[in-house]
Image 1 (cartoon, rainbow, N blue to C red):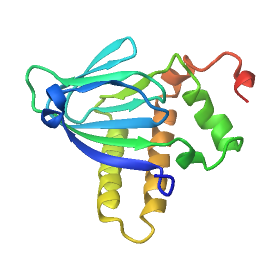
Image 2 (image 1 turned 90 degrees about the horizontal axis):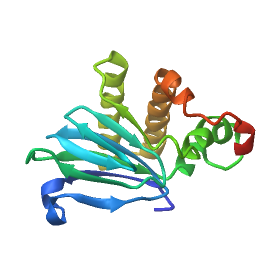
Image 3 (image 1 turned 135 degrees about the vertical axis):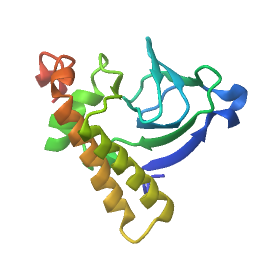
Length: 176
């Protein structure tokens, strides 16, 4: 809602029509954390196989669908975020320097985190906290969630800098 521009859901693919998520896209960012089972994601032109513990960040306006792999029972923690929630207003430095180069990059439809590196375990922990705060809604939960999500993006942008750098436009001035 405009009052709190993000949502958290627990998606059991067996409860979806035909037991899969049909191809769709939206202007929001989507974080998918595989809780149970193996899931096959079709993102733009890429086919990905995700297992429990894998995290997928889907960029805005990117067509994507998901279906269980190998008759697996799939449970996903899905967080959908309107980008403005993260940077508050267009034109401010965090929007121009951090988010715009990512959001406006058509060559970067997703970021997949399936490594066993320690920094990804912190992201998993933070996603569980986001889920907890969102479901309990204690006083000030919006600030805590925003802080956690910004921390997750900082970790991804920092640790995947070499990978993401190859996708950034050669002339970022066009994005400002």
